[in-house]
Structures are given as structure tokens and as C-alpha cells.
Amino acid sequence: MQLIAILLITVSILTLLSGIAVFFGATKGDRLRSAWFSAATVFATIWMVSISLFLIATPEWNQMPLLVNLTYISAIFIDIALLGYISWRKKAGKITTLVFLVAGIIFTAFFVRDPGLLYTEIVLTSAGNSLVTNFGPFYFTYIAFFCALVPAVLITLLGQILKSNSNRIKNGDLVLLIGFAISGTVSLVFNLILPLWTWNFIWLGPLAISTTILAFYYTILRYRALNLKSRWLKLLSYIVLITSAAVLYMMVFYVVFIAMFRGSSPSIEVIILNFVMVLFFLLLMPAMSELIVFVRSLITGEEPTAKGKKA
Image 1 (cartoon, rainbow, N blue to C red):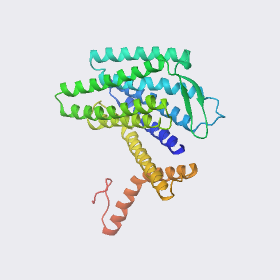
Image 2: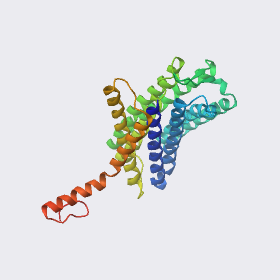
Image 3: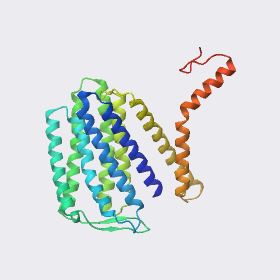
Image 4: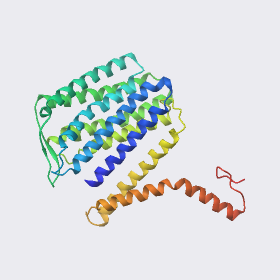
């Protein structure tokens, strides 16, 4: 679970960085839509960090109720914020978003007043942490809320794809449609339905949602879903890509390690050391590229230009 927790926290940082880049890089006309996207990244970050800490928590922790409550509350507003980002340009989209937002606030108010509406006990054991779910009307209403919200997002995207005359916008919305359909289904199954029996796979929902949000970020950059103008936007985007590559490496490393050592998991020290080393290597890639150009110029006897081309 340590690797899973580290991956979730790392991906949450990626998600938050993408939200910061979009909000501060957006032009005045797109600032409100960028705020919805940034809000989604903030709630997704809270969700992922809360779940990662829940997975590795020990019985000595005394802040578990707060972590669990944040998990349930933040999950409500991720999809609402994404719906706002997608549909805020249309009057019907604004109304739909505000309806779900009010419903989400009402859910939150009831839950904060009485957390027992969703769970009755927090169980922390060496075999794995879990909750004793309250299988009452409120829990199934909570599930029904997401069963309505996820299709609302998908229907909005599908409508925009059918009505749009721009291939650029259609392609961008298609990426979002496929990504959100997958992540919404994964989150519904592994974070709301499957916990009725086991809590071993609750990390899959946050991982799927974070991947979808990064896909949203990709469409913003690739298909110009928002007008972004910022000098440091390139820097943040580079950091997001570098850290994404590091996360992918860590996943491959973990699988290879288990395969080579017959099911043994790497220690937390080995995981952190590998992550720091690969991140350090990736950050040095631009300098290494310049060094290669310099060495090549020494061999050929030609002066390198600033962009790495021969003079």
C-alpha cells in the first residue's frame, strides 16, 4: 500500500499543478471556466491525498474521521466542477451545474451534521483499513446522486460533439467523453459499490479520475479548449510531463520488482530512492541535451547555436 499511497500523492500534485497552470494562464474571457477546472483539481487532490493517507494509516492516528469525511465530501464536488467547466458556456449548462451544486451542498450539510449517515466505524488493521458502511437510505441516495451526475456530464459532452462544427472541438470533447466514461465507471464501481464487500481497490477510483483530469489538461493544451497566455505555463506543463513519466516508471519498476523477487514488495526506502533518482534524471534531460550538442560540436569542429543547430 505504500507504493499506492506515494503514487496517489504524486499524481495529486500533478493534478493540482495542472489546475494552477490553467487558472493563472487563462485569459480574461476564459477565467471563469478555468476556475471550474481548477476547483476540480483541488477537490481531486483532497480526495486522492485523503484516500492515500487512509490506506497507510495506523491505529495510533487520531485524525481519521477528518480524512474519511474529506474523502466523501471532496468526491461530491469533483464531477460537479468538471460539469461546470464543460457546460458553463451554455445557459442550460449553467442551470444544470447549479442544480447539482446545490444538491451537493445539501448532501454535505447532512453528512457533516451526522457522518453516521454513511459509515458507523473506522477499522484500522494490519490486514487493511476499511469502514463499516451504513447501508441506509442516505448511502444509496449518495450513490444515486453520482449515477445522475456522471451521465449528465457524458450527455453534455455528447451533445457538444454532435452540435459542434469544429473538428478541433469535436476531437477534444471526444477525448474527454471517453476518459470520463471510463473514470466515472471505475469510481462508481470501486469507490461506491465494491466497498460494500472490500476496500482493497478504492485507490483505483482516484487514479482513474486523476488520469481523466490530466486528459482534460491535455485537451486544453492540444485542442485549445481554453485560451491560455502565460510565460510560466510551459514550465508547469514540463513539470507535469516529467512527473508523469516518473510515475509511469515507478509503476513499471514495482511490477518488475515483484516479478523478479517472487511477490516481495520493495521497501519504502527503495521506492522513495528510485522515485527521487528517476525524477532527478528526467529534470537533467534538457541539460544533457545541451551537453550532447556541445560534445557533437567539439567532434565536428562547428559552433553550436542556442537551439542546438549547427551554425
